[in-house]
Image 1: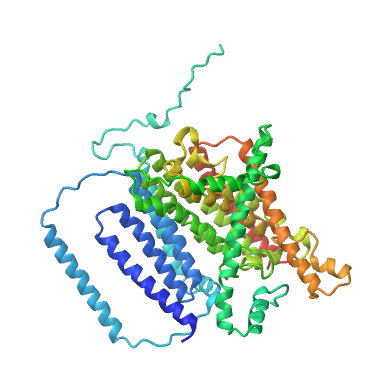
Image 2 (image 1 turned 60 degrees about the vertical axis):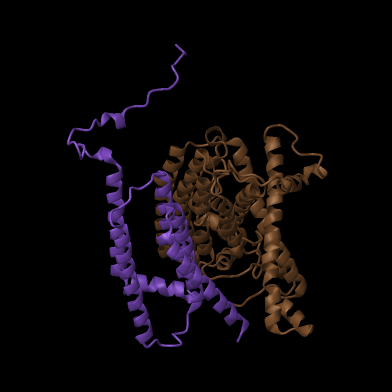
Length: 199
Length: 373
């Protein structure tokens, strides 16, 4: 075998192991901060898998979107509400864990079955390498234009919704007590901290 | 595209063939060489920048600055580095030691990886990846995770606040940065840094991107300074408020990693500004013209070596002019407030960079000759 193929195989085994162990860690670890950082590691390894498939643009986009935006925001949110409280034990936790574990195992079995029964077209089509950036752009603006635009509208809606939820001052009444909110507190002019001594 | 200029890899492989080594082994032997070279270049670049910083700050404050370590204090940064190397490595007792160690590494590695795409000449870069400049944008988005990690792991409120500020800052300035890069990419029709430089070097200094993208240049420079956490944007480590931000608990080599990371990032940003807007390795007068005036064929060995060295010198010269400018800015401007910083990023730079992109696109349609059809 060629040296490049050996390297590829070793990289694939390492990346696969990192993805599986890392994602198990994301789910099973008790410390939420560790879970969030491990999630970033898993995203990075998936980008590595894309690189192995010669899809460098998709790999870079994966890093930019999932690691640089999604994961950073998750960690950001966790750290802003950095409360170290003991969660009260949930009733029937063992049963819940057993059921969810069973569902996951069934899903895994299904996926393995699909993987084994499908006739994969091996070897797949030759990769176009660096030309893929142009090809992705063409597809996004021709036959995938509608899903692309719909996704962007969806993101815009989510963003506006988040802003409305975060800026409670645009609501006139308190949601819980139905009392009027004093808008002046937010709009209040800032008082100078130092007393003007010039006069 | 015909590759012109020096191709050291080819020559290396041929030399290895001469020694009777198979091409595969020669390739394996070749692989670490440019990486090592760039690592050394990056570290030396940092040493020079630290020295410049000390000297320029001294001049700005009417002091002499480092003087006794070597001529003009040129060995002072080496002494700094050695001092950090032998200092005790302290991990606070209540800190999370694993994340505490991983944080600085996550900050440094993406920055060094980004040197992959910096071209010093036609073939003088580690790898001419097709996604070029996009790789840098993607890699630089990993950095905030390292900052958040070290801020959290220090178990110190100043560190946590500094880490949060750093992450907020890099997220807000990444978008205008990427949009101004996008305008350049639109004009070049390529993401590759080599193509971006070549597109600018048709007519020498006149065809540099700075004349076609003056607004983009300013946006990029401001955002690059913000990404490097340089004053006026060094809020994550504002001494008066946060001690030293996320670096507060760090000592010894781990602190040095942050220090190294921020300076490598500064040099890298300056290099990328020169690549994107100032013609990269291009001489103000195209080398082809010079060669034809001297009646030399462009592919003669002497001219090729000359072109290569002019390329390296020009890239470094442009980058260090920008670094000098950044240092001057640091020692002459006051720091902005956090709300001013975020306002500047979201309410000013983002709309302007969007308009810049729109104008570039329409100019490209209207004047395809000047704006890359």
